[in-house]
Image (tube, helix red, strand yellow):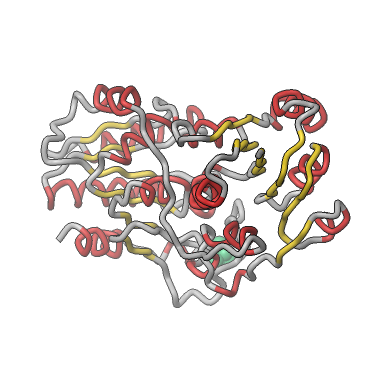
Length: 345
Ligand code: SF4
């Protein structure tokens, strides 16, 4: 039996699709499970047993060439028993239609109906359904029970070893705290200077070194990482920035080894959940009810529930449309320190 799962969304969504992949494996233990994801998606899934990941590099090759490469990688004559399009984009649905398949299952939309998928309704954003539970609905057609499991990632020995090498400069015997102050989306980011103040305060209170992570934002992000690290380490505290210096495997390993993660509403929150690392997540223009809240057993969301314009955008707009940016401006360093204190008590 051959199964194809298409999930070409952002890394965080791919991480949150791992319980679905595990459920597919459990339902069809002998099946060959193929996944189409972005190159970063395939990188983050590396090491999960029984998956063959095919990278769709839509940015570098364009949709048509990307499709051709993927179809060649999947095998042009291969017939899949089931194709699950977890991602709801037209591109993912069109790719699923392009491969030979006995059945195709997707969320209900104009295009999934147009391509004659079997469809199930997509849970509404007001349902408070966590994203991990959403792909599970595609299995409901198979009579599967659903729950809200944590994401599941693995780290290889070499990723762990490499992360440990990076931490050599720090004294991490008692552990360390990871700060992830970035996001793909402008308004999802709390302020760098507040992350720096937070780092100073937390490092002082708990005598723990701080590691700043991030990547994908190029030289600008790396400079922010350096500024935060130097602010924290200007006192007695120790901090290093690894922004832009890790691959995703090393990022996983760094988060896996942390005592606590503080991050914006972004992929590291879900990576931490897969290793059950205590997490403080800072939510600005987004909201818990949209289903991306942290799933670690010990986790807290810091958000302003008294800002009437939030949530305003599923991803967070590049700039605050109201101009005041109160959803983030009104989150004080002390609010986040308090959350950290609740988890590190
Ligand atoms: S409109 Fe409101 S929720 Fe949206 S970014 Fe501005 S302050 Fe935040």
